[in-house]
Each structure stands twice: as structure tokens, then as C-alpha cells.
Image (tube, rainbow, N blue to C red; front, top):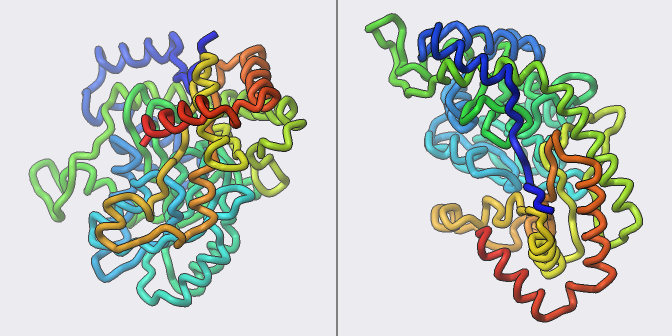
Length: 390
């Protein structure tokens, strides 16, 4: 049995929508682009949605729209993909990394409060709804309101996740989404979306994604080419119709994993739904006792035909570029560093079968029953497995 970590869904109506767009619409800024924006804004519950060619582009536009400069600092977790903070750094902003909680791997709002007291130049806070699990938005919004700080939600992995009944991305001043090919919904390639209730922010983002264009041949700001192609938008419009159904299936898969792995004290399963937070399990991420066990299990599952990955093996503050620019060192964020050394992503996608989930869980049990993590040869294979990732 070969089980991939993730698998994008392609249906006949998506193919037909792409062909129809190719044959009947402008390939750039065709009708499907604006329909997709309108439908996505309605889905999230905001006034405006601005499509882009990637989630990273949406982040760059977000930081531009709040006029981020080299005089500013931005708070972000280090437990995230690099675009979360590099998008602000490209405009000159200083990164300020916050700790995460080990209960749900999202930004620790209490640490954010400490950082705000220490730093006087905070322009924005970027809570990341990591793995599709909502961050602690109430406390973060309170902190931001006290100091007139912008909240840019990184919901790149959290399409449809809810916090107190409201979809994430629509809670802060700006939300961004990614439609990369393994996300909960895609556009048949790269794509992104910026959402907001602020008309000025939306208008700036629209101009910036299209060269700073004011009219056909007039420009009142310097911009980029961050447009989403029409064919991608047509696919996204269809995928949006399936999103809630796919998210329900992800939650069902997560519940089955939870049940099958519940007897293993050595495995910490992901945080579950609560009356406040409804996750969408972009990834199903387990946590192990230490790095040796994590690496060995990753290698062992790969040998059994089960693809695994680490999201992410090197936290941002320990990335070579961050250490070079700011001198960040190990020990700065102990919870984040422990997270990076002990988490493991196992297969999660809507078309994953229950029998496959049982097979994966069975192999994890075998791993611990045989104490594979104590075998020197498997420890070596685990180290090799990790090196391939980094």
C-alpha cells in the first residue's frame, strides 16, 4: 500500500470549468476572477476579497496596504512558513517572534502581550491558524485594539475554520489565504486571496496586484503583477462549493485517527474541536517524545509505504537568513524549538479511506510494539530521513 501525505481533488466539473474559461473568457481578469472573489468574500463573511497569484503575494499586499516600512516591527510566530514574516521583511520591517502554546501550536497571546510592552514599533501581529486550527483571537484582538496595531490573519491553512462561529480570516483587519495545490481548496496551481472589511485596504491591494494601475494606462503607485489567472479562478469557484464537504471529511478522518491512536501514550494527537474553535485539519500532526522517536517513526512509516513530513523542521528564528540578519540563537523560543523537533505530519486528505487510516494507525502501533526507535540502524535511517527534509 502506498499512501501519499496529501492529494488534491480534481473533478469533472472543475475540468469543464477550466475548459469553459479557456474558450470563453479573457485569460487575465476574466469573469471568473470577479465571481470567485465575490463568492469567497461571501463565504468568509467579509465585504471584500482580492485574488492574487499566491498566498505570499496576498501577504505582501497586506503589509503594503497598512503602509509597513523599515521603521516598523511585526509580531509573528516562528512556528510557520517563512512567507508569514518574510513578506513584511521585504518592506523593511523587523521580525519579532512570539512563542507558541504546546496545546494547539498557535501563537501564545500572553507572550504577544509581553512583546508589545517591550517593543514600541509594532505595526502588526500575524496570528497563524496553523494546520487549520484557530488561534486565540479574542485576546489578540484586545491587545491590538489597545495599541492601534493591525491584525493580519494568516489563514493559509485554515479555509473554513471557525472561531466562536466566525470563519477565520474575517476576524482581524486583513486575512490571507493560499490556494497552493495541497491546501484544503486549490485553484489547480498557485493562488491566494486577501480578505478585509476595509474598503481602502481592498482598493490598495487591487491596484498593487496589477502594476499600481489606476486606469488602463495610468498608474498612481508602484505595484506588482500578482494577478490570479482566469482559469485558476474558474477552478477555485468550483472547489469552493466542495470546501465544507471536504472539511467535514477531514474532521471525520481526524476523529478516526484520534480513536485509533488514543491508547498510545507515546503519541500526542492534534487539538480537537471545541465550542470556541472548529479546526479544518489541513494537516494531521502528531507529536512524539523526542526527535529520535519522531525521525525514526518518519523513516519507519516511509518504509511501510506511508508518506510523512515535518511542518516545519527549522523554526523561522533559526533559519540561516534570520540568524545572519538578526543573530537569533537556539534557546530563544524553547516551546517552538521543541515543537519543531517532535511533530510529524501523517496522511490527511478528503479522499483518504478509512481502511488507509487504520493501516497507518496499525503501523504506528507496530513501531512502538517493536520499539523500533531503540534500534541503532533505524535511528540512523531516521537521521537520514530528516536530512532529506532540511
